[in-house]
Every structure is written in structure tokens, then in C-alpha cells.
Image (tube, rainbow, N blue to C red; front, side):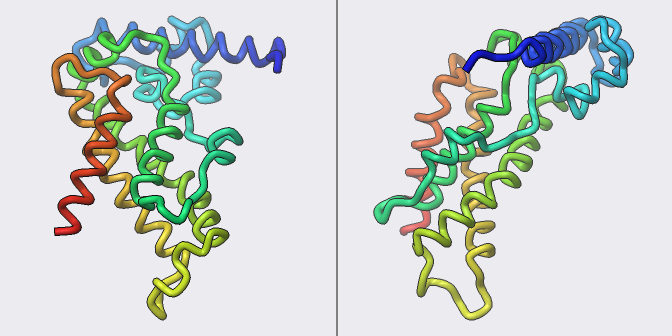
Length: 209
């Protein structure tokens, strides 16, 4: 579907803010020295406009959007009888995380910024909390409709409790998988699926001993 003029203008403004914030971060030793006013001036917008696009300067530097589950992700997500629930949810989290990460800088620069400002790496991991929050409702709905937990819940447990537990465990696996992507030489975001796959396999091996 062709985007409207307003959508294209909004996308250009979003990118301008993101690039201005990333450039400022690249030229400052401390992120605390960068103000919203500085970023807004570089992007040629007002400070008030900044908050229409980003929640924080950290999100602007990283190019993080508030996570949402779009129709394409929701339509493809379901539980088959043979699915490993935790692994399936871990890959759901990865898909939502990727859709909310719209950086316009190259990966080497992205990693360099997180090396320069460790609080950016912490924010990237905290963003998984936001992803978990939006994924939990979908996981709950799919569990309820596929009856994967029928007869498996205790008297005091609910589908909501089970969904929250699965999402929490899946989120922990995703965090574990993300660390090598930030620290290991020659790792890039293109390795994320294979790294997550191995992390889930190790989790199964450890928990089934």
C-alpha cells in the first residue's frame, strides 16, 4: 500500500531525529552531556516534537520505536501440537524486537555507540521488557484458543499465569542470545536467529537432564 504524504514526512522526521541523536552520541564522551534541546536543534525540530517520536534520547540514539505486534506477526503466530512453547515465544519476541528497532546507522557504528556509552546497551536489553509486555496478551490468547495447557494447570494457575511464565523464560533466553551479538567479534544481527536457536537448544538440554 502506498504511504501517504503525512506518513513519509513523519518517517523523514523520525530518521532526522535518530541520525541527529546518533551523531551527537558519537561526538560526546558522556551521554549525559547531550540534551534533548541539542538533538532537536540538530534535527531542526522543536524539543516538544522530539517526544512525539521517541520516549528518551537513548531510544533516539538507538533508533528504537515502541514495540507493537503488527498483523503480519500476529497472523503467523500460533502453537502447533509439536511446538516447543518457550522457543516459539522466544522467536516471537525476536520478531517484535526487530520490528521496533529501525536504526538508520550501520551495525559497526551501532556497536561502537554502545561501547562508547554502556547505558545504551542497558537500554537495548531493557527494551526486551517492553517487547515482553506487548507479546504477553497474544501468547495468552493463543494458549487459550489452542488448549495447549488444558489439564496441565494447577488449581491456582490460569492461562494468564502460564503465558506470563512462558514469556518471562523466553525473554531470558533472548537476553542470553543477544549478549554474544554485542560482544563477540564478527557477530552481526544476521546471526540472531541461529544464536537464539542454539540458546533454546541448550536450555532444553539443561532443563531435561
